Image (cartoon, rainbow, N blue to C red):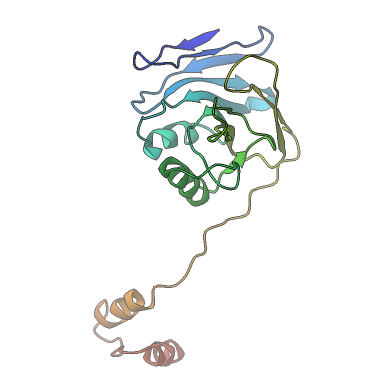
Length: 210
């Protein structure tokens, strides 16, 4: 069992329980924007999977650089917990600033969000019901999440199932384009023998001569 005490006097705290017959070891990351308990599962043929459970406080800030520490640790990573990020694609409630930060980072980093089809958080007023608990994964192509209403809590537990075999790389979702203005500058100034570039047609002519 691994634990991470809460960062402040309000709610939080993480406990992770592992089966004794699963080879694993704990790793530590310093974080100031969320609580985390992280460990590595040791599989056959030197294969490893980093698993992190996190909790972000309701009014805490979001620092994707700290999340990058976890996701740069291994080829395959599962990071799940309460991200406090409400997004229209997952919730009926309005989005918040954190969700846009998280979603932009996930897209840029070529990761995946695995969320249950049902909501995971239920407020007393029902006006802010949303999905706050989900997983962000790296190099997993098949996974399922299920929100289970079994406890008297404002958060439902979420059951995850991952397919470890037959991994297919995630398609890149970042469009790469040529910066024509920078290309003009490079052609003009890096070599005195390069032609004078002032337009895209000059670029085409310069390439043809090369």
